[in-house]
Length: 230
Image (tube, rainbow, N blue to C red; front, side):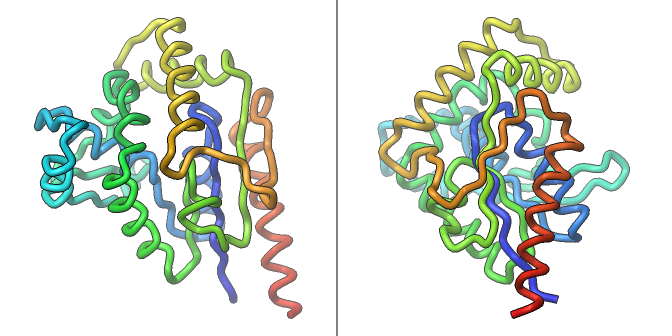
């Protein structure tokens, strides 16, 4: 059976990652959390105090970074490892969230991560979520989804996520963080967040994760069915 690439882009807090995981599980595809990759780089830069205006220091730091994912069946999630260390919870902290858009806008960082992502998807059968998957990483993806949602709904989802990781932040803090990320993600010069002309928009404001997943799976099934008749 033929396989496809599913690219899920959109704003922070729309449920992209959770939906992408569920879609990948249902199709028995690989799930690649590109956001976690950029968050891991951000965490490393913070811990090593890498100056974001020093190109040489950034290049040197990137050479020291190894990011990989491992399935955790017990918790039904993928764990993110940075240089052999499980950083799945650390990379979701508010401090990382506040800087990840700035770090991911750096040309050297994007070049390094995009190269890894493209290698991961060469054989197809992958679901990737992020900001520029359909526009930059895999412009040839057979299915492109663009997710959006009201700011308040996104903030409440992110607050629940943080609480589940024993981290706290006020709703106002999260709203401010999301507004800042939206601006940086959409205005950066290097591969900004953008809705491609062939992307299917899904507004997740009032949708459950199950409903989001079902919509994406229905679209993927249609594409796969068409490919089988060709």
